[in-house]
Image (cartoon, rainbow, N blue to C red):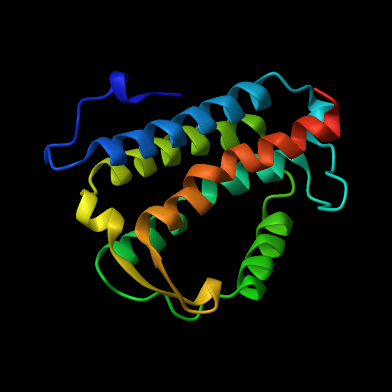
Length: 174
């Protein structure tokens, strides 16, 4: 995994201290998930999470694969546009489809995607200004509540790896 110090800052130096902090926290979560996943045995990689039912490997790939969508939602709000037509039913349907499609995902494939997509997500976050982070718009996923781009980033892209990592650790007692 790479961190902000491993890459040059984006050409546009408009990112804020808050944006940099959000991006750093996203990278820290992705790095922690990658470190944990990399150390798993093949049997642990195939373990299904209680109540969730998905394999740990599938969930690692899931986290990696949805970074672009999570960033797109936040960028939509940052541009002052509402997020429409996205519901929890859509999220559950997408997750179920992903689980079937990537049931046999390998550790190398999942970790490579996690590395690439988390780096791209962090770069996209760093490109946001304070004004964009503060911009609010209706979000259908939250009953059309007017939410800020920063909230959506924190509740989705930044939090996602931490959320699933905690569940994995609990399931494997690690």
